[in-house]
Length: 102
Length: 102
Image (cartoon, rainbow over all chains, first blue to last red):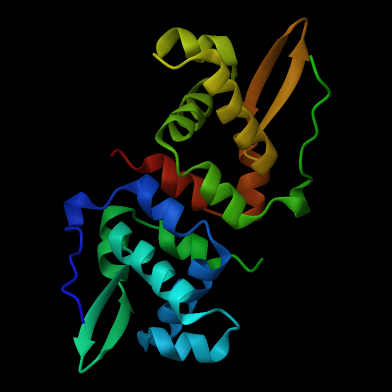
């Protein structure tokens, strides 16, 4: 697995987070992570009809924006939501977004 | 002025609103509208170094997403934030976003 970098709490930008959440698939990933704490990219593939390469890109956008963390476990990447960081940086925003049922 | 259409309350989609707010200029427009209630596109040009055509595009993205309304007054378009609609559709979200000082 390639070495990944993550923005620090102070580096997380509001517009980047909003952009990361502005895609239906990425929003669905975030909602799933909010319920399940951790998941691999593959476990999401299993539930959706989206190609793994497309999903990997979506996970990268979320990671680069500071929305998720990915840690290596063998050859897999285990993803988790940076909920505490996002709540600290943008109080109330993520909960308000997660509450919406479109 | 061209006839404009606006999404109804039910047509406002979360991902479209998040995308509309994911640009620094558009976010600044929304913050200005939240403070001032109404403004023309030109009054924003006056305060920024952005070309009027670029700003017109930004206002259109906000309008199409359901974030702002534009009403004609002579040859000018007067813009206002659809705060009540957004608060009703996505409770607490806009306030959480407006509170952030990047």
